[in-house]
Length: 293
Image (cartoon, rainbow, N blue to C red; front, side):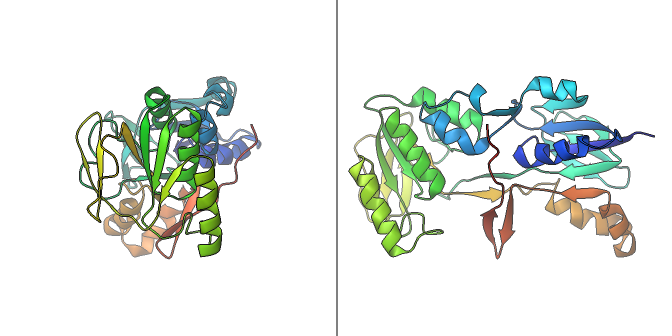
């Protein structure tokens, strides 16, 4: 008898796991939910799309035809907002209710928005998914001034991509070393000099205090300086954090509350948690190795 397997998350980790499941004899009717409106793509190559080196089609891992060929029902643009472990159902933000026998949670991480006044203003972007990247490419151009808030790996990739699109780019980093999660002061200093050599301005040990204006945004630093008279768009890209919703942390607390600790383990056996990253000591550590494309 076929069982219903629901995969919540249409990203690299969830679909890679599903590929392995599908190698075995058919056992499940599979439905995949993704809150983005695209098929599975290589998120790690988004910087090359931003730089104009690849197109969105170039980074697709599993095109729509793959889901059809493997008899996988794909629900794009639907965010799962609730789980009922007693009834074994999930609820989408479109009010749909879907039954599961087995549930795989692979919702990944999201861009962390720093608590800066004005981050909700027009032309303030994050750099996490394909829609973010398309928005940045549309806004970029020769002579456009951009500020990247956050000098980690993603921030620097974004800065270089924007520069290759013709932008005048400044990176503002809170810590005194670029890529401080990976590099010591010597390595970070060397990297900063190399970024300056290719034309990207680097400001370390600087806290962004507020963003002013709309459309063309002024960036004020905590030391009282205004970075420029006019910045066409700042890019907040400090780090990513695991998604936390009713589908994840709240779900496991809910299981014990509804059925008690003695039965919780049995129910949780029907649910797997899989992600591209993991929180260790309150810090997110990325684990997903990019797939060749």
